Image (cartoon, rainbow, N blue to C red; front, side, top):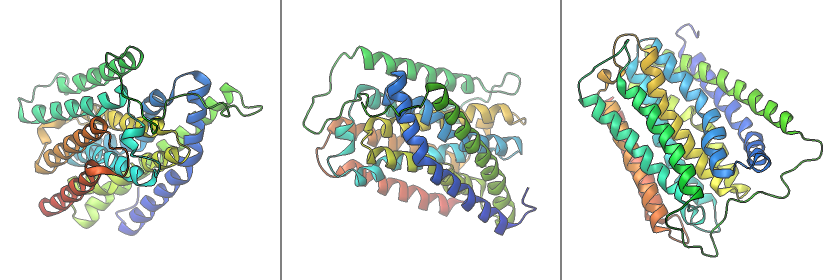
Length: 340
């Protein structure tokens, strides 16, 4: 698409980032209103609506890389997106001055999510080390990831409605309750859904641009597909999550903020299933190298730190877990640069 031009690739990445950043605010407000109007709730809306749409650029980028025969780029883009998006929780914590974000947005579905995601990431590690069996060129683990994601959503809904234990409420705890001011005069539910799908279409186009630009960077600079996928395109495709989580914190839709990151991470895991379908040279997990293993382990560490923060529930400040997340992510990127 870019004729091998590094300059055009960089400009394309900058332009795609700008589109994703500019659209993030209006999109977050729209989903917050949809969550109230439909009765879906902020957490589930973050998981499904925001998580699905903000994941589209990464999905298209990973599938494009796999179809072009670069499985390392495809996997690293998905897994690198999970790592950086999880770190955004700590960044959002810095912007929410009223209390520790994990304290204020504590809930059973939010606590279950990073644990479930860690299980999915661990399944990828085991699959990469195990026998590479395929059915019509697809590893059974790709189907397993879809099942685990479905089960996670189902379990999240169940524990949210029928909790077996409850989060202790404090003066900083914020509930996922409809905003009485969410209804705008003359705004119909059908119109809101139309805006939602229009924004989703724009986001999808940016994903294709990012994928093309990333592959051109690999060819033109000699950088490894693992580093470009995990750090460069992984970050660019994650900018919608960054914008939406910061904006959600700004409007105090805290459960929407956490649901955005967690939902986006869940969809990013499904990139691997889609990429396995697109990769026609066998199981994509057989191509797992040191870079992919490092980024997968990084995702597990970061998500377990989120779970630890939700369990500990420090009332004020970013907390040890948040600081540790920045340190772990920075160390992981440095290690990736060294081996890439």
